Length: 397
Ligand code: PMP
Image 1 (cartoon, rainbow, N blue to C red):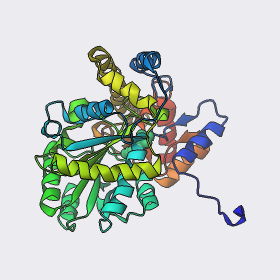
Image 2: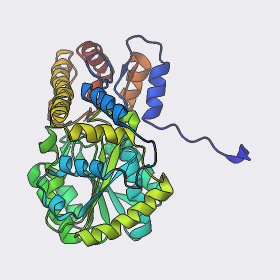
Image 3: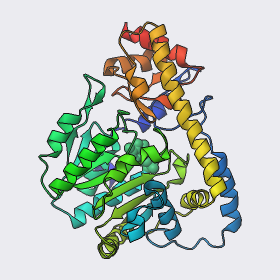
Image 4: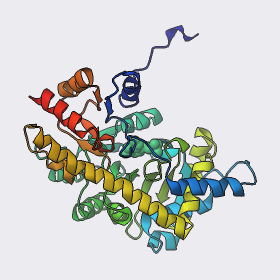
């Protein structure tokens, strides 16, 4: 039966982790997969999560199913974190949040929702974008295309080209933007630029879809949500996909959310009925544990304050590594101006290294990064930065 099945290509990012694990070099460096690492290269369980786990396990009375969209208290906590407790969307009850298995699950729910309910809509992705985006929407049968985003000449946002393209999109299409800490470029619009983007999409009748996987990894929890909030003007409709893999360090618990914001509460109920239908056929209802941890933390003032401090520590470490990297690249005589690395936000940096240089770093120095030259800055530490920069100098020379 299976003799006609062809082997699938190796996932470009997860395949890199396998290659890294198989490398016997004790000084190998993994800058590939987007997972936070502390100064010792460890991806920690946050102490706030340890405490929340203790409480959740102690209080748990049943393993019976959750409702299709998950726990309503979780949905409410997610909305408060994204929008701020006083937001009009919350007051008017026109947003509806479903707990999904990770941000990936949220994106796939959006894919199936678009395919089934807005079948004529094309989804526009930023160029570049997270490698899994096109694959997720292709799997759902949604047509995708791309809008300009990154300008390699300036290592910045191709804002004029982006806006010009958005102005040509037909009404009824959708655009997937990264709410903050754009993956892979690390380049986000300014608040003023977000305002113009949001206004343009509203004028054209194009549906904004925000992928919000790194709240708190850029500048701060509030600051990172500012762009997204520009889309949430009174009456505006949009979709937000959240992931708590990074900011709560809950990667393997698969905890995310999809929020559909409709024009009013009645529309919200109609839309949610279709979202429920999608979820029912994809995974029926969500796994409880990870969301219970997030809800426990967000609903307890002391625990939430502790979590915010732990998140700030991760963010501060990454930003510190950006500064160190720029300094050490110069010290090791790597040609060129790398100061742009310090201006990027989040875990990732587009290093500007070519495919050939990336391949040499892997083969000759056991340093692993994605072929595009995307670096996970969290993989850099005081202990490995000199070896890393010396290797980059060697392949750039
Ligand atoms: N969106 C973006 C932009 C991401 O980088 C990621 C994770 N790499 C996700 C979504 C998915 O996150 P999760 O692991 O929660 O599925």
